[in-house]
Image 1 (spheres, helix red, strand yellow):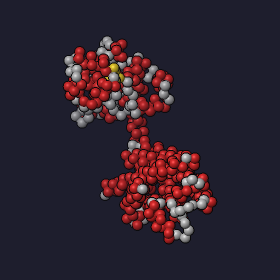
Image 2 (tube, one colour):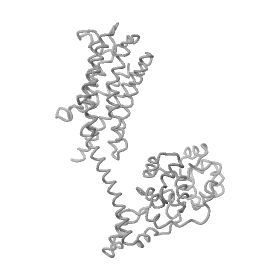
Image 3 (tube, chains in turn yellow, orange):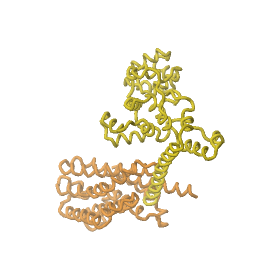
Image 4 (cartoon, chains in turn purple, red):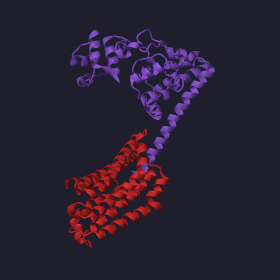
Length: 244
Length: 232
């Protein structure tokens, strides 16, 4: 979903963006026809608001809460929980920390080789949802959205949730509403109110038990993906050899 | 009938690209299927049809020949598709005993309907005499065999559309589209039983389905060529 175009025009004017479609499109770096279609249809997607806010030098979070639809979210941002932060950690990042505990200094030595990647990462939305799920979240969503539970799970795995749905999930779970948008890459981590180095610090603070759990979890996911890829490749060769 | 010629040209071109490989013993079944189907579509173009039918022992024997070629080509292609998508149970229903029974059964019914019809001239699918119920049934039953095969294969092929491999995705997409059209063709055939005017639409759908399936198979061929070239 998205916000009404009238509201978008009013907001754009209030932050000093041009009102006419052509200069506005030029300022946002999108084609005029794309923007015009969004304005004509009366619905401007959240990603467009975020892009416009960045151009205007306004915090995207403030820009989003300036719209009626998200007005109730205005106010100081809620800090992400440690689980939420760790959801955006990849296997390699967790492994580096694990290695550092076995061979002190490894983390510093590897800092030039590997930096943490920003979301969207493969599985980052699914991991975010697993981190904030108070229990039965998928079933609740299936009921609210009138979708089959399997379709909800598929949409989560494929990161096909709309920004409004991500915010809705955060509302249900009672966590920071920016978390889902950050996991999906709509907002950067900093825009979502994360401290710089939040992930790195959270990893450092993990107990050995929890760190092992995290690595095991990421490794299992990587193995599932590798198996799927191997099976797909085998199938592709089989099809090519039998039909080609 | 330019569409018919276009279909034949595409089918023949795709079959010919595989000829060198087939001579070296590469996938003879698929290549034979490609030639059989291309030949079947060539035989039913009006000019070829009249020329060939003049040589054959009885009037409209060409159409029976074209149908036998088409069914054989589909049987071979269906067999390989079932193998490619690793579907042994479906394979039984395509080319195992049950599959053979359906193949023979449909063709015997076709011959019986052919004998029962009273064609007034030479035309593929006896299309000059669509006012006869028997002729319409003859035409529709022929579309039942491809529909049968693709109804069996579609569930497996459709699953390939979600693969992470581009070649699998595209081949599966083209085969699925062709398969769906084969089912649509049968549905149009059923409509033709009551409304003969639907017949020309059905023939276009048939040609389109054949081209889509041939493109899907050709894509697997080119993907394999690319892969073996990259391996060298």
